[in-house]
Length: 250
Image (cartoon, rainbow, N blue to C red; front, side):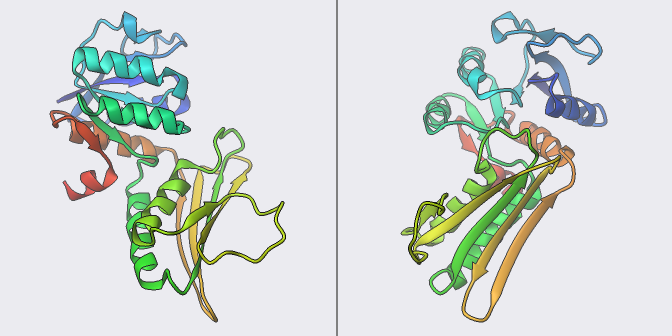
């Protein structure tokens, strides 16, 4: 039985995680951390990590990037594994995560969906076969409340492609340029509107043919389910960074 400390428990994703865990018998939420007080969740909620009085096996983090360091400090001091599901981390924060992973097990992925993990592998395969002769573009769409752009998932897809074609670079903004598309660029485009959960599409455009790979998220539950599976997976693991590929491969 994996004991979970849920950071950001009172947010939309936190409540979704709570609902999912309540239907499972292989894990339990022993406490939450959130600045919002809520006595209806069925477990104690602390406003800061320094106040937590319950021992957990894994922290599942669906909070805010600003809370990253306090969460990691607590995890290190209590030797607790971490699943980082918070989006919008800066390069500096990601470097901090990597440093802490030398002492505690950390599961980190821009997207917790198994389908997106498969999409990354398919994009890598397509890049290996088509990359030198096809232009590559990535489109992502999310709800109008999302703060970061492009999405971490779009970057994850681009990074997967870059593993096969190392000399490409990412182009985020063409409006100020009057020049032909560079064959070494991957265009990354963001759409924000309504309550779109998450749409990602990778386009390989060649002469007289186009190959499209896409994933459509219809509910936040897939990300919450993935985070819970990651928590169970990372519990008891050795210190390092783990990701969805590790989870898929067991």
